[in-house]
Length: 285
Image: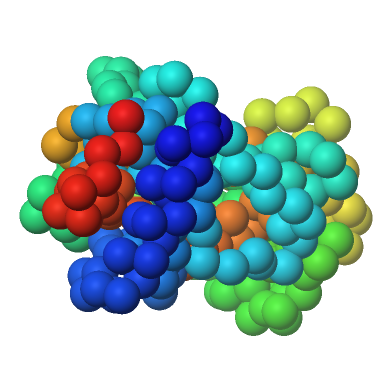
């Protein structure tokens, strides 16, 4: 920081603190970064210097459970925060001038002056098993089995049982439809009803078999279940800029990362901050 810039920075701190900059920030969920409007830190100044056109910049309200460290960064054309656990970055929020949303899906931003897009791949903690009975008797057995197993978890992961009741349609086509969604399938026919077994089908050879008791079938499902992850990007586009949330979370972090990001990261009014400085007679280059 140049000597004259440092003096201006101190003057700006005094002027804006006195005015208190009464303005609500735009945030997600319950995140509240509004105190940063009057808190003229070096990070705020350098952020608006990095992307001078951007109306907003990301700000962090609080650390969540499992968020070990936060690194703030700024360079010409980009600025933001990196959040890590065990030195591995799993979430980065960056403001830049423009971003490519051509591969993303538009979703409601909840803000009149902002658009939101998402390009995400995820595997949540819940494991889904579709039970495909072959007729009336197997349908009754399927319902009893789902009730008996209600609340039983696989490796501390909840299991959702869906019963396919379209018993007039071929078992094969119903099973293929479920498998196309990437879920596990338990087929129950009359022989399975007599022997108390199921036929396990999945897209993984290791998780298939006939004549399996439900406990053994659950063990195979656990071994073949993909790990929990949340990867990809959220994009927020607005006047003069774009904020990107880049996710690469696995395990426990991935189970809540979407909600945590909504609640813990907000939008700091960078353009308003710059205007406040200008009104105070100070120009942030």
